[in-house]
Length: 452
Image (cartoon, rainbow, N blue to C red; front, top):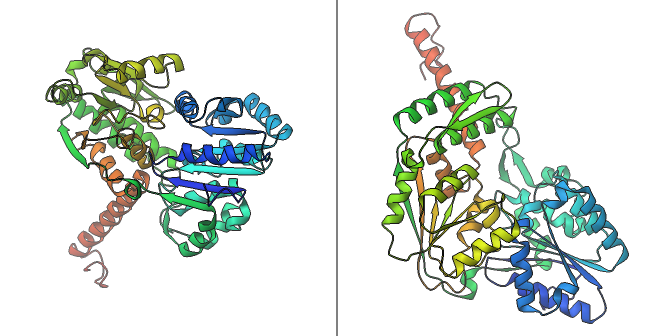
C-alpha cells in the first residue's frame, strides 16, 4: 500500500491468498477519504462476483456503495453493459481495478479493447493477479497497456513483439524465446508489488497422484478412428483444425460418440449407464478409498461429465456455468457446512476467487491444457488457513491425449505447439526414411544426405 498509494497506476502481483483484495481496499479507502476518487469499478471473473462482494463486505462495511463490481466476460458479450460503464467512468472520478488480469492478456480480445477504452477515462488504475504470466512475457503487454502504455513504451503489440519476442520460423505464432526481459523488469518494477505465499507463511506441501484408467474396447477403437481422421485434416496454418482434433479426441475420452459432418462435431452418449464408463468407475474406486468424511473438489471439463458424476457420487453438489448465481451459492453453502461431501465443478466457474481451504483433496476428473486456470483451481484449497498437506489426483486415460495434456501442464507448454513440433518431426522422419529406401534400391545417388 505504501509503495502504490503515491502513484496513479500499479499492479499487485500477489499469489492467491496473500491479500490482494485487502491491500487494494486500503488504497481505495485512502484515496476516497482524500477526495481523489468518487467511485471504483472493480472488474473480476463473472464466476466470483458474489464471493468477491462478500469479501469486500467482510473487509469494509458499506464498501459496495462506493465499489461497483462487474464481470470481465460480460464486457465481451454485452454492448449495453459496456455503454453503461462507459457513462459511469465518464461522469465520475472512477478508479479502475481489474482483478485476475490474466483474463485480459489477449490484446486482440473484445474484452481487452473495451477495458482499455474504459481505463483511459480513469485517472487511477490497478491490476491484481497471482499468475500474471501463464505462457511467456507476451502476456504482460495488454495488462500493462491497460495501466498506461507509456510504462512499457509501446503503442502496439507489434512494436512490443519486435523488441521482446523471437518467433519460431517453423511454427507460425509460436514464441521461441523472449528478449530483453531485464528491460521489461526495469520498466515495470516501480509500478508493481510482488508477493508469493512463501514470503508470507509456510504451507503444508502438495502431493500429486496420477490415477490411470483405460478406455473401453469400443471407446478405444472409436478414439483411434476419430484421431486418425482428424490428424489427416490438420493444417498447421489453420490452428482451428488442431483444436478441432483436440475437441474430438477429448469428447471420445469423456464418453461420447463423435461424428464429423465436415462442419460440426455431432456427439451422442456412448454409455447408457454412467458406471459403464471406465473413467467414472475409476473415480468411484478413488473416492471410495478416501478417508471417511473426507471432502473433495472434483473438476471436470464438460457439463455432461458433471451431470454424470452427480448421478454416481454420493452427497455431491454442482458448481458450473449453467447454474444461476443463487444455485451456485446454495451448492457452496452445502459444501462449506459439510452437508455435501463433493463439489463437482469446472475450472472456468470454480477456479477463481473461492476460499475452500477447509478441504484438502482435489480430483481432476478431466483436464484441459490451460496452465493458468489449473494453478488457480489448485489454490482454491492451497492458501492461508490450510493446515494439512493437499492431495491432488489426476485421472488419466492411458495412451491418449490425456497424457500429453498432463505433460504440457507440468512443463507449462502449449499443447498446440507440442503437437505441431511432433507433426514436423514425424514428417521429416518419414521423408528421410523415403530417401534412405530409395538409396538402398539404387534409385538415388549417394550424395551423403541419404546416408546421414
